[in-house]
Image (cartoon, rainbow, N blue to C red; front, top):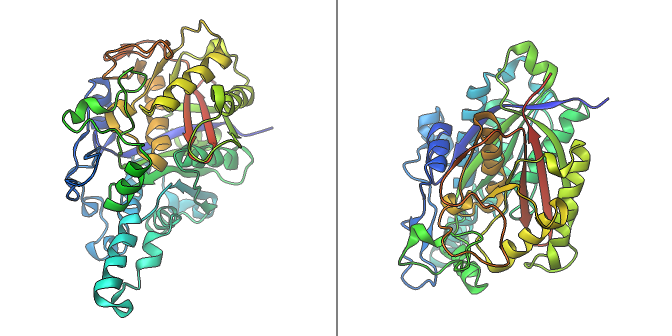
Length: 412
């Protein structure tokens, strides 16, 4: 028999708050964390807006400045979110370090390190490049640093599936506990891609919103006037724990992870498959894994990127699974946070768990002009009090990677 898996701790660093209390209250209040980018001069860029993390200092989490300097920004975010989550769970890793693992995904990794070191190479020569360059920039280092800082010695790995990285990491951590390979996992995603090179690439691909005059209105999932996604940064980490292990500790349980589904589009490097076919298969797989009927789901935290194709095809995929006349509540918290790429699944799993725990569905803000091709209940502009027994979180990534989580209220 497979083990049951519950969420016992959460930690977040995000454009709308660097702790769970601020994150959740700002989401429920419909507060946008998006503004003009301050990290670099954007005058020559088509998109000049982003969801930046504000007032962040890793020293506040007990990490020395010397150690922090060895970490890329995405790894710093992951360490901070993980330490928050462990504190929230009141989980003492030292008691059974070998049975507690880490899975932190990232889509881009330490791209700012690569950019700065390339400048050093050109301007000062190869002898002046940092010996920490490689271990700072590679995508697995968020997971590696979390283990080093926390002492978790179990299964440690990193998933890179673009914007599905965080959700795949949590889903794979869920599987590890289900199968008895760990009693607990630190799982989620981390990203810090608000950099010149990253923006140049996404602008060239015409992926980003150019609504520079109205930054807080720029991320508008499912709205007819959407014109691209808004880059975000941060980290979302959950503590997943085997149920009996959590109960013996008297741990608080936010939600139970019930199912995980994944699929591949095998279609295009950036565009979703027609009709959202890959996404609908992943949703069906997650529901089947959870032994849940579609009509039992009361809330979907959508991928909802604010791009023309994603929002239309995700809507079609939801209708394929839940029926053309479904009344399920759907919202995109990216309307407030922007798109955190590999970290999106982490913070959105947290939003799903808190919706279940608090019985509040966060809104899709900036929903002003209905799109005939996006005609579901998107919880427009205002949070909704509603009993949420079962919820789903969707993530889709470039390359055709789809990952879905289903969670529910914990019941004996």
